[in-house]
Amino acid sequence: MQTTSYNHPLFFITYRSLVRNAETSSVRFHAPRHSQLVRECAFNRSRQNYKFLVPIKQSRLSVIPNTNDGHPSASVADDEISTDHAPNGRSETFLSNWSPPRYTWRGLSVLILAGQVIMKILKGKVHWRNTLQQLERVGPKSVGVCLLTSAFVGMAFTIQFVREFTRLGLNRSVGGVLALAFSRELSPVITSIVVAGRIGSAFAAELGTMQVSEQTDTLRVLGSDPVDYLVTPRVIATCVALPLLTLLCFTLGMASSCLLADSVYGVSINIILDSAQRALRGWDIISAMIKSQVFGAIISIVSCAWGITTLGGAKGVGESTTSAVVISLVGIFIADFALSCCFFQGAGDQLKNCM
Image 1 (cartoon, one colour):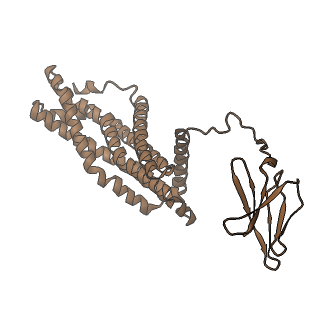
Image 2 (spheres, rainbow, N blue to C red):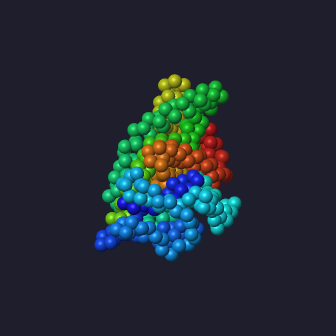
């Protein structure tokens, strides 16, 4: 095979033939436009002569044998090669290579995904089979760990203040304090933390794995919207199951606290229940349900958004899972503060009814 090459001070570049004529055994190719190369070069093996067509600049050539296939090759002399290179016409600016931080566009993806989910629900585009599967996963399969956590948190909270109340002679206020603490703060927050650790991490890991393995792209090719098929069922299931789990955790937390106060500190269960009934109002239970729904939306949307924006393979899936749980917990605490300020800013006289 005939080749034409030229020597560069740093590189050795070879242009091989592109078109070959079988009749004349000639090779014809086009070289790139260079100040000391030709636009078109033709070799005729039958005549054993080498000529350049349409030269750009005359150069002193030397024909040397090619050690690879035995055919000669043409080489441009080193002293006639210009090392001047044309400057790049593009001017780099200060922000040409700047890209926004990852948490910025991930935060925007949470807002965009929340808007898409709301629009899908309003339009009725919900995959109900997946919704029922996710509802079973978030609800019944999470009851055990939520109830166990709530029971021990209730007993620990009882140990902290029941002894002090009994020494002050405030036995009739124990039930009211327990009921208000569990309904307003402990039950929704503790349940949401457990669900964020168990369900939120699973959502982020699943969607992250599907994203890096291009399964979400496959859904788009098949004509299915990943938001309809993957995200919306998880959001609906979490927002529906979390208030029910909160109600169960409130009941079990109160029961465990009553048993501990009666068996250890001698406060009767009837006194605790009567005090709780006097202090507790319907709005306290409703506010707990509203908080749980908001927390469920935060957990599901953040976890799904972090999952579908995963990059970097298995390592990226692990980082997205951890980050999704952390961001969900921070969002829960911020939302809890904001909702508590809105719901209970003017409250403060309910314990007077149980004294």
